[in-house]
Image 1 (cartoon, rainbow, N blue to C red):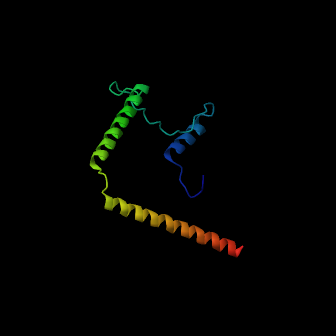
Image 2 (image 1 turned 90 degrees about the vertical axis):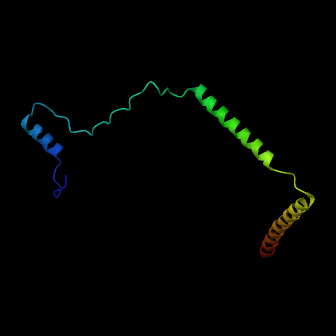
Image 3 (image 1 turned 60 degrees about the horizontal axis):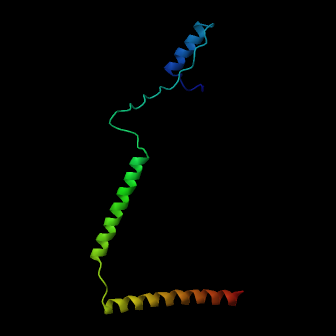
Length: 110
């Protein structure tokens, strides 16, 4: 123990026990153990049946959500479809052009 620190009350009591009773070896103080949470009758441990039931419930919820989304969506008209195709095509061309330029620069430098 450092000289500038005072011993704790538990350590002082331990040192006193050691000095007064040399034939008995006292145990050093230990941290208190927190009490365990009591098991109540209303909270059964989850078994595989409950886990299966929970997964089935999640699957049914996902299916309901998919059906709801499909009911909300609609088939695009001709103008909306052509706009999406044009924008997608321009994106593909831009990515291809960037890849070609990178490849060209690499070939010219090496």
